[in-house]
Image 1 (cartoon, one colour):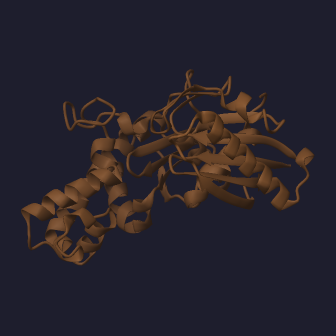
Image 2 (cartoon, rainbow, N blue to C red):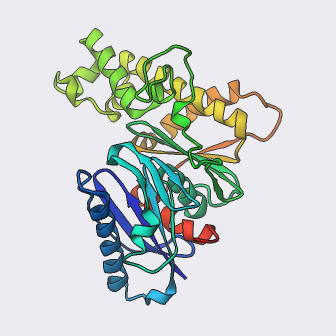
Image 3 (cartoon, helix red, strand yellow):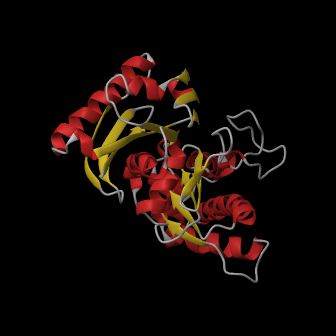
Amino acid sequence: MYYIGIDLGGTNIAAGITDENGNIICKDSVPTGREREYGDIIKDMAMLSLALVKKSQIAMEDIKGIGIGAPGTPDTRNGILLYANNLKFKNVPMRTEMQKYIDLPVFIENDANCAALAESVAGAASDVENSITITLGTGIGGGIVIGRKVYSGFNGAAAEVGHISIVMDGKQCTCGRKGCWEAYGSAEALIEQAREAAKENPCSLVNELVDGDLSKVNAKIPFDAARHGDETAKKVVDRYIRYVAEGLTNLINVFTPQVVVIGGGISKEGEYLLKPLREHIYRDVYAKDVPQTELRIAKLGNDAGIVGAAMLGANTTGS
């Protein structure tokens, strides 16, 4: 059996065909053109899917479903994308629109939940039943998998983990609340923290690595400078890791998953990130005299959205 997975992003539509184990047979992408009407965008999703079927030479009757991972809040039961801010989608009938072009069951889910499902089925958490995947990017995305099924709450809006509070009345978050984990632990937050520190400390290696142009600071720069012994960068990275650990400790206290998977560009720091995270978490977590949650780096990278969306068909009954 085969499944089509579509990762609908603000910049690109990525799609692929996978087998029932989440192995990608073929994949491709096209620009989203998010300023367009939703009907045009969904038509492109369908045409890309049909092109992949033709390219793969897989018979349509062997494809059992289409999964769509989208930003925002889905109504998974009715196949409607209720709200997606960066696409300006509101109450979009994704399933009905897709089925105008392809007569297959269509499933939708939040894109972060799809990434979590992908890591559970075919990635870093494939050997456990319960896991949480977080992505440290522009924001903090997250997905919760319980018994190898995505937990999305009664209304499809669960697992907005970036918006748990770690500092009461803290920094303003883009969601309207103050003190959110995302405002302190995202890659964007780290960049802001590094820029502020470098501005206050002109002799910092951070300034040298960007030739004095702080607009060039990315999330890798402070880690690189810290590894070279720069004290300013070390303080920035240490504080940032503590912020990440605070949110992870909260999640572990609530869910105690067997594994927490960390994705996003910052995850490429590997053990330089994981080792201090473990130290903070295992010191602060409530339940200490029990087996502890394991931290792992995500394996699937940019393919997670495709794989997770495809696996919606393999993990969901009904259409």
